Length: 353
Image (cartoon, rainbow, N blue to C red):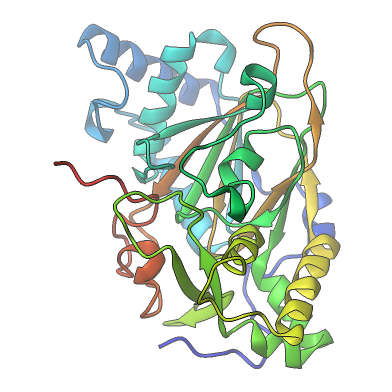
């Protein structure tokens, strides 16, 4: 069972943004040899007529680089919880080639999970309002407000949140003309700071908050579920949070209304995230990897350059790594299974007739 921690949580994941802003230890450069291995693996796929998503890890051999990726996985699960791989030569490849390369690299980090009910496995994070007009999704009840997807795929800012997967991977193909900076914060340090400042509100964040699926699930699952913001199981911290989903649940019948104290706890949580975060500019060829159990991420608003193929573009994978932590009983409502190392998370797909 999950147990509330009434004392500060120590460990490498309890970092402060000010310290990380002065450090480069979280950046790992992709060597020329590693880039050559990625290219050789991609050319091997082409010779065999393979392309994403119809191949797996064994079809994309990385004899030396795979060992470095194993170290990265350990850092994500047992260290700070985030890594930036710098120097993937994205400009060498066509869009289709790049997706196959990214899929193959991702296969060495975990199993890809669906990002929406339409079966998306590699997401293109860009301003879809610019491309297609205002993004509206018929699957989302307009009474619940804008979906998390429509917010992510606009040029607006994103509040601190977690995604519905163990690891989120973002590969920068093009950056914005201005803005679009990545912001991350240690969820463990946020919990520690709230404990020090307001232990009464800290205790509330270990209790259930109701969330809405916002119509983003397929298959007729219950549209609301309850989970705490903070939990510890088998000595490992976990968080899963997007205020968008909590606010949407408050608009649904039968969902308990938030108390004034619960609202105050969420407001303090947001304030502390802002205070402890740091900002990084992700360059083309950078691959950002975040452990959603210990990291919140957000984004500043941005402005794209004019002209075709000059807009900000990130490719996103949601991954279930082989070394993920066990989760508390009851978290099946979101994850499907709480077993460590299991293929879990992501968005449920329609049941085939």
